[in-house]
Image 1 (cartoon, rainbow, N blue to C red):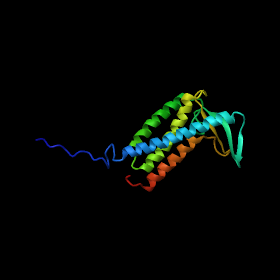
Image 2: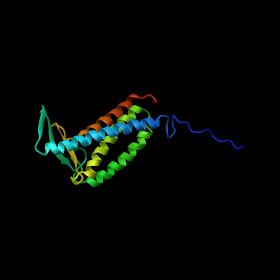
Image 3: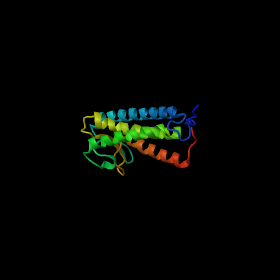
Image 4: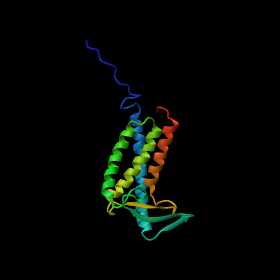
Length: 169
């Protein structure tokens, strides 16, 4: 009889850790909620804010802008290239989510993935020539949208959970 080596474990350094299905589900639910909220608010913004901005409070206004660039309006007019970058980023995020060490990290990465999908949806499906709808204006920061906020919050939360340490759950 031939001996075989030990089978790889489902936890630890294995490619598919125990509970990975749960983490992927958590990230998928979070990302789906983000995309739905992002697209709903952008649809509202296009409909309502095309008639003019709305002052909310202090320096917070809601005003419609079309951003054909990336964060901070960099790479203006590069919508198709930014769409390709977003697709590659989503692939990397999918792998990171599947290999995430905890549901907290998976949820935070789900925020980032949902934000990336929301902005990618604008680039691909809205008739703004690859532009993203931005409408939250603070006047001391570039105008942004729900997807952008989720990307930032998700990235900070991921860094915080990883930095602080996390249980294997």
